[in-house]
Image 1 (cartoon, one colour):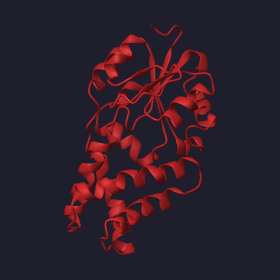
Image 2 (tube, rainbow, N blue to C red):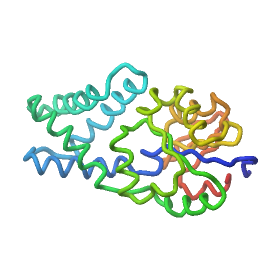
Image 3 (cartoon, helix red, strand yellow):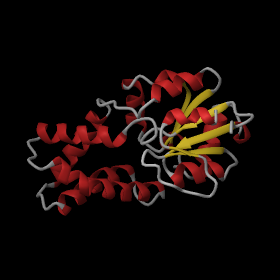
Amino acid sequence: MKLKGITDVFFDLDHTLWDFDKNSALAFKKIFELNNVEISTDDFLSHYVPINLKYWRLYREEKIEKNALRFARLNETFKAIEFEANDDLVYKLSHDYLTHLATFNYLFENTFEILDYLSQNYNLHIITNGFDEVQYKKMSHSKIDHYFKTITNSEIAGVKKPNPVIFNFALKLANTNAGKSVMIGDSYEADILGAKNIGMDVVFFDVNNKTVGNNIRQIDNLIQLKKYL
């Protein structure tokens, strides 16, 4: 059923439009080669992915600072795979990772198609917890930045999703209100519950079709947004 009265569509970026996992794997492969780190990227990532999620949760909950997150997620992963990496190497790899991450620009299937479709009738926006300096590069290099009227990130808002402050900040920046807006994202806690709690409509996106229940609209391919918008 089509959503009624919607004028503004807000997207998360990582894991929703921009294929973070694929791009991140390619970035790690590149920086390991550049720094002569001889480890299996697949083995590294099998440990890094859950560790990274853990630290992002701490970051979202204001329990860890950005620089600490960047160091700790790599340092803990190297310890988990029993690879000796001194602090200088960890800091170097952390820096190189962010430098090269946005040079890989895989998007989820039908990203351009759905943005073309939606931009004809709606104002499009981004709300992201990602780092300010990296998120703009991701959008620019992947050639999707021109679709969006506003981009709100946690650093300019001062708080992170699901804090209602960042959603209200984004709504004010977009000159709209919750009743006319819908949030699309992959994080049930940060995107879906965060947006619902201030009165926005929501659509949960998960390529693996993970069911969240509670009568939440959900899709596993972006083109399915045509059912609702």
